[in-house]
Amino acid sequence: MIETRSLSQVFGVGEHAHQVLTDINLFVERASITAIVGPSGAGKSTLARCMNLLQQPTSGEVLLDGVVASGLSDRATATQRRAIGTIFQGSSLLRRRTALQNVMLPMQMAGVPTSVQRERAAALLDRVHLTARANAYPAQLSGGQQQRVGIARALALEPSILLADEATTGLDPNTRSSILDLLRELRAEMGLTIVMITHEMDVVREIADHVVMMSQGQIIERGGTGDLLLDPDSSLGRELFVPRQVGTRAGIPSYTVRYASSSVPTDWMARLGEHTGKAVSFQGASVEEVDGRTAGYVVIGIDLGLESLRAVLDPMGLRAEPRAPHDGAADDDGSAA
Image (cartoon, rainbow, N blue to C red):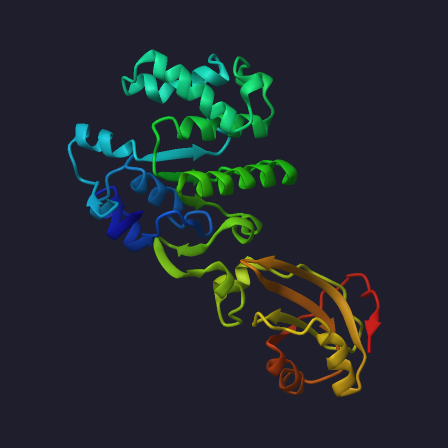
């Protein structure tokens, strides 16, 4: 478990002082996967450096399993830091070391006996399915393989917390999914607490139990991923499923319909058409199973006012919102009545 209490970070002094983090109170449950999201400059990476003890906060505390781990001496901080493994974007492997040697590096720096280093590094490479590539150099590995070596290296000192800072950025979709599958396996098998710093909302939907949204150095919203996705009033829930631009038919209002309940009938479009006597055109959708519940949105066109539409959809667990037309888009594809 990792926690921050009233964490603040200021860079510079006097008139040049810049407040990067302000009063961050965050509790990450043991063996959970928590995603921290937000735009560039929101303070995500600074928070990550404070959480993995690479940077001391200006004020406030970082606690590991209820014990204050920030503001200690260099030696005590180094000891506490062993409880946190960090995965970086692009893996940050040393190019003149083999995969095995890269995994051994943290143990060498910590003074672990050489025999233990090799045995543990080999076991970790096996765990990330790279035994056959133990003697390969980073340049001989694919991007996904390099990131797997980075994960193995992050686990070298047997941490209880894994912090992934944009660890899936730049990976192709299949490789990214395989890395996320691996993280889920490690959480289940090793009881790891995982904190992910990311801007990829599809990654959040796929793996995170909880989400924290940051803006201008502050936490502005947080909650369970499934709960946020089903909350039509949640700005973070909306960010997790951003509707793409789709075509509209001239003169026909277009609406984004979001799932707001776990019990939405699968034939809701047909019911809408039957109840209103109006043609319902399907214009686009992004619907997924998240945390065992259906979440996402469907874009429809229907010649009906917003209040009348909501009167039909609200009881079915759906929330309709008006959608501005997108000039120049292709026509929608079909209708259901």
